[in-house]
Structure formats: C-alpha cells, structure tokens
Image (cartoon, rainbow, N blue to C red; front, top):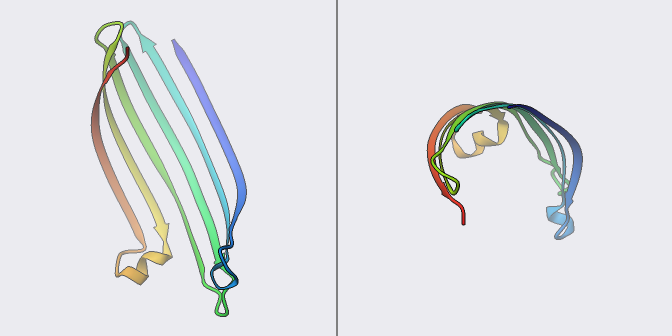
Length: 121
C-alpha cells in the first residue's frame, strides 16, 4: 500500500514571435510524493521545488524569474467502485521580482483547500 514517486526536470524554452519580444527561459522543477493506501482510504504528501530565469532579448533586456516550493497533503476515501471523495491542502511559497511591476509583494505565500467528488463510469 506504500508508493513513492519522484521526478526532476531541467530545461530551456524559447519564445520568439519577433526580435523585439524574444524570451529565453531556463527552468527547473522537482517533486517527491509519498502515498499510502489502507482499505478505502488513500493518504498522500507531496513536496515540490521550482524555479525559472527569464531574459528578454529586446533593445533593453529585462530579467525575470521565480523560485519557490510547495507542499501538498491529501486524503481520499473510496465510496464505492465508481465514486471517491478527496480533501486536499496545498501551501506554496515563492519569490518573483516581476510582482513589483504590479505593486505586489515579491515574496508571496498562499494556502488552498479544496474538495473533489469523482465519479467514474
């Protein structure tokens, strides 16, 4: 009933609609998730790390980027062969200098709680 999943990625992407709006972005992301199933219950915990560095190639280069982490906890109860209900809590914390342009705080944290009813046929 115990599962461990993990993944890590490093990459680069280029958006080049025209020479004035070219953007190069380097990114990295990784997660590790631990799940446990006992009867009709499944419990899960996940930790994520992420970041990016973005640079424009305009006449006046601008550098953007973000880095942060997140933690998620979830519990699912199987109600029958086709139906389950999940409660999930996600907390993320990140740093993004670009937020200053909009008058927001550079460092932000948020917590989201959600439920889901899943019906499969």
